[in-house]
Image (cartoon, each protein chain N blue to C red):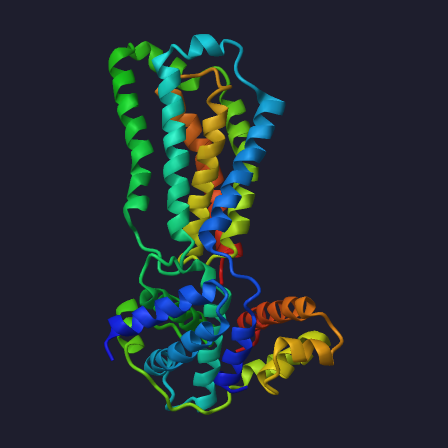
Length: 211
Length: 185
C-alpha cells in the first residue's frame, strides 16, 4: 500500500474523535462514584464522627489523603500523553508526603516516646490494609481503562501514578471510617496500603498501557 | 520552512480535524508524512534495509498518530507530540528486531524539521497484515484505500449502512495497529 492511500484511508475514519482529557475526567468520576457507593453502602462513617470533626489529627489525616488524591489525579492527566515530561503537576506529588512528614515531626515532639509505638500500631491496621486497596479497585480499573486510550511515554510510570491516584481516592474515603488518627499510624499503614495499590498499578501499567 | 510556521499549520489542521474536517486532516497527514520519513530514515539504517521497510515504519507511525490523536493537548505544541509518537514506535520496532539503540528526542525533533519526499515506494506490511483481517474489514479497507471510494460508495457496494462502514473501518484500523505490534519481525 502506498502511503498516500493509507492517508486517504485514515482521513475517512473521522468517526471517533475523543480527547484523552475528557476520557480521563469521565474515568475519575466513575471511579469516585464506585468508591463512594462501596464506602457508603458497605463501610460508612465511624461511630463518633461528629466528635472526630473537632480533632485536628482527624482533620489533618483527611487533608493529607485528599491532597494525595488531587495531586496524583492531576499528574495522571499529564502522564497519559506521549510527550509527557516531569512538570509542575508531577512535582506537586511531593505535597502530600511533605504535609505528612511535618505532621509526624510534630506528633513525635508533642507525644511522649512511650506512646509512639501504641499510636503507630493503632487499633486496626489490618482493616486499613484491606479496605484501602478494596476501595481503590474501582478508581484504578477506570483509570487504567481510560489510559489504554492514551499513549503514555512511560507505561509503568503512568500505571503507578494511576495506582497512587486510586489509592489516594480510596484513602480519602477510608479516613472517615478509620479510628486511628495519629500521623504515626497514617504514615505507616496508609502508606503501605497505598504502596500496594501503586505497585499493582505499575505492574498493570507495564502490561496494559503499552502502545 | 521554519518549524514554527510548519507546526502552526499542523496544529490548525489538527484542530479542524478534531472538529470533523476530513480534508484538513488529510492535509495534516500528508504534510506530516515526509517529516516522519526523514525521522525514520535518519534513525533506521537503510543501507542494508530495503526502501519499503522505511515506508512500513512511516505507515506504522501515521497509523499510530491517527489512533492516538486524542492524546494531543491542543494547548500544547504539536511538533514534540508527533516526534514523541515517532520515537516511541521506532524504539519499539527496532527493539523487536533485536537492536538496542537510543533515540534521543532532540535528534527526532531535528529530523522532524526536515522533509523526505522520496517515497512513492509501496510499503508491504499493511498489505500482508490485511490478509489477517475479517473479510468485510479487508473489503472496506481496499475499497477506500486502493480504489479510492468514499464511505458512501463503499456502503452502497457492500450493501451496508454508512455507519456500519465507519465502525468497521475504525475497527479494521485498530486491528491493523495491533497486528503491526505483534507480527514477527
